[in-house]
Image (cartoon, rainbow, N blue to C red; front, top):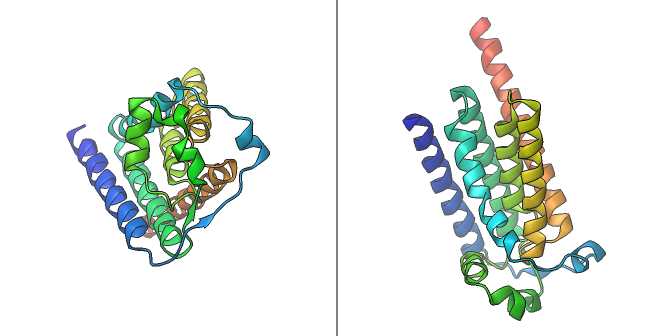
Length: 201
């Protein structure tokens, strides 16, 4: 478990460095994206701030409690998510309307203010939060009982809702994040299959 915890810390460190490096060093102006009708229909709920933050707990237990092979694959997938997303944030930065961040109902709560102070305003699409949450959920659900699989994926759905409710992302940022996660998972699975084939030969 100690080794898996080190995987978590290393992956989290890489994620933070790439995320902020790309977002703060981009020389390009962020393009403001329009709201969708889905985004307009989702209101702010304080409890979803905790759901938003809970991704990091999902990320932790997905790596720490998993078999070594899945822990490594999860870490690799999250690093790939972050690499791809950071390139997009650097070359094609996007942001949400300032009014969302300035909303009194969003800034009234302490945790909401912390989230917004740590967030960078030019990395909307794709949602790296969702890409990594999907990856963590995927590996957390592997080889679990059916009821636990349901719990994990409901948890993921609530995280998707939370990023819109807290004014961090749009609906299509979520779709982009899921697609990004699927690409990374495909790369990691193919790499794993190739390694197994080489070992057999």
